[in-house]
Length: 376
Image 1 (tube, rainbow, N blue to C red):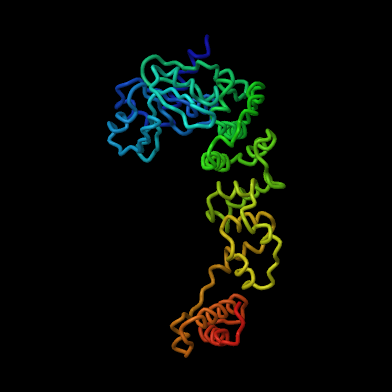
Image 2 (image 1 turned 60 degrees about the vertical axis):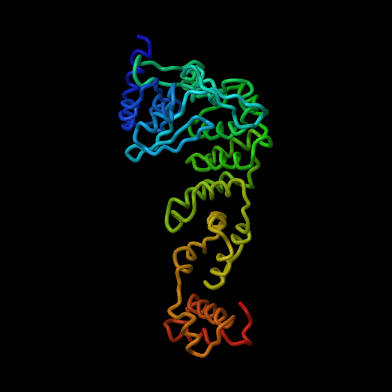
């Protein structure tokens, strides 16, 4: 029995099970509607739910509005984004894309059918579609199902990386996530990926998407191995360490994971190396050092070995005074720099265990506020 006769009904049933929001969309659609790309790929791989991308051979904006949602539309690219029952769905009008020059944003035109739309995509495994309604079939004009079985990423045409160099970063992202290799011809074509033809923002956005993946360290290793990225020394291992650290207290939620992983892999972002080499003797010294750095620097410095930063995050930075400037003014300290000197001195004393309680804080502040005291 042909594989499709048993596989496709199961595929469609799986998509509907993983994406219950499809029912409302199918009911509202008047034009041919297809699930495309990652949702199809991951369902065939048994990976469960993926981002849902739908293509309408018609007007995606009109379908979005008919769903009663307040769609975010991108007219230039004939796409719309809607939220249904708390789930985000991307809708796109079937379209073709041409690139006037390497790295340029594509010129979009309506496509006559789904096959034309699939021809604009990055890799064959992302160029498959399943119709919602009508004949149950897998639309696979470029052999994506076979490449899926073989664990290969294959571009659809020889100019793919030249047209859009950021596809090379996507290749690393998918290869790392899926455990796939590059088809031999695709690997040869990587040399056409010239990031100088795209804006820094577009390149950075794609790198950040890679950094957000659980398999980001492997992805950055692949990019480096292909000669498309220069990692800092030990960058892949450092990225893995940062990712692991952000999953446990006290660092969980401190920074956006993608930003920290990206900085760890490619860095440096600033003072993290010097911070990691520091060995503060007193908590106040640690607070002064860490206070000069942004959160990403702190995270990377900790992954580089600055274990004392655990105490900074969990304890030291949360220390606050019981006194304030009004208390110093009432005690005779004039308004101006003396107030700042006094409060800073009191905080240092409290951090270092030399001032416990309001009266001790005030005494330390009054000493620190004296004009003859050096600035911290």
